[in-house]
Image (cartoon, rainbow, N blue to C red; front, side, top):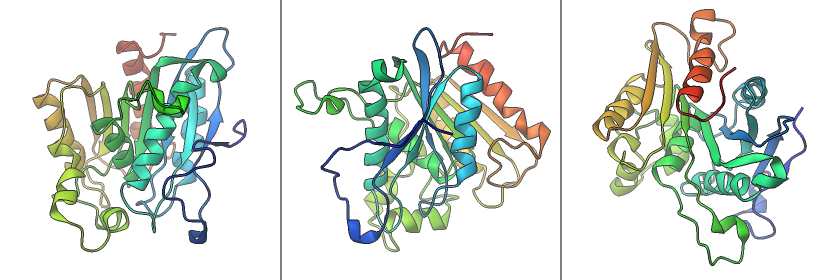
Length: 269
């Protein structure tokens, strides 16, 4: 179990509409008991911007705990909310954890984000379009940056143009989005040199979200000389999560654990 849901916005939730019947955005914390501050990761489950898959939330958080990382599963707003509501929740989540680092016994310089499928698009959007933070803000959460210190993507939706996932695009942008919005949310086109290190995994025969999403994003990362790891497994259905049913793909967790040591995000065993 997590340690109790935490509302991230306070009394004023930008764009919140009670009549839509969705919960207020919350984080479900899974904290590591440690004598010293740990790294932390905000977890964004997938669900085509229409729902959130439980196995891409708490299961991931519990696994992160096994490698000494505290985790915070984000319940972000989805359809009928549109862009920029989901990214506003994800940015706020990173800021909230960073601003409350001492409370959670986490290292404010080691706050990452992980996302799966459409949650991968949300996580990547948060990394590509961070808020710098306003030191003069009255709200202490707004004073800190929303830039994640690492980005982890599992079979992510990346593009809203080529090889896009139609359901995610429709739910996030609506049925007839403006071309400039489609362009802005096609993240492979907006990789920049200030991105943190990135870890990506996908299966080559994913029939729901084309592996081309990961390959295009990796190409952009290489072009900007961003530190990244890319693992493409030959076979596996979409939405595997920890992939316990398929041991060859489940190796992604060991690969990620080792990579997090390599980039200095966590200590080695």
